[in-house]
Amino acid sequence: MNVGPAVVIIGVDHEPTSTLASDTRRLNYRAHLVTWPGHDPLWKGPPPLAVLADLRVLGADVGRVCQATRDDAGLRRAALVAVVAEQEAPRLDLSLGFDDLILSPYRLSELAARLRLIRWRIEREQSPDVVRAGSLTVNPVTYQVAIEGRPVELTLKEYQLLLFLTRNAGRVFTREELLSHVWGDYYFGGTRTVDVHVRRLREKTEDAGELIETVRGVGYRFVVPTSNISSP
Image 1: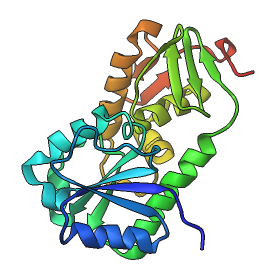
Image 2 (image 1 turned 90 degrees about the vertical axis):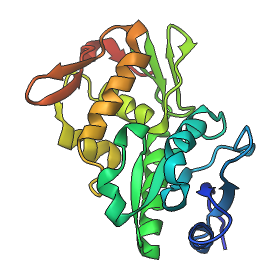
Image 3 (image 1 turned 45 degrees about the vertical axis):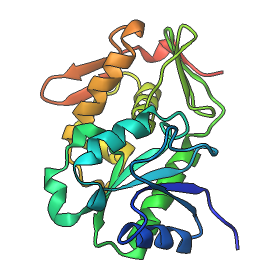
């Protein structure tokens, strides 16, 4: 039986996190439990497919866990997925940067679908074409983004949003459309998360100019003309 990519689970070494790790292994992923508070760095292996943050047990440390994940060189490019009790989901701070949510109690089929969707989106993006827009370059193979050759550190979802916008330069997308294309139709977080990610992208790419334009009352578009975007 084939074994899938690694999935890092951040939580505690007992229920319910241990069941989450067991369920992930049942789906043929290599589940690695990182107990919180963890060491620095949290992860020393090859980049995992996803990080499942078990919010059911992390309590007030959720913000620290998210920051530690984004600061960890081995984890910052992985999809950050919140496993949260359904009744707590409306109070979740979306500005923490979660790429997806799994509502608990979950079915094994739902966990499988979430991980499969993350894997599919990553594989879909791994085309050989480097997208260039002015001084900005986006490499779908290496996940590297640079401005005038200087690397730009992005989270996975920031990268996916930027890649989608650059590949569709000049076209206006509503927040709902961006949420559907980048996060998927079954993301529970709402359109506010799009605004949060656009704001972060603007901050991180400001040296390349004002790339993402707000179209009042509609949504966003990448403003570099299509004629200025190329891929070899």
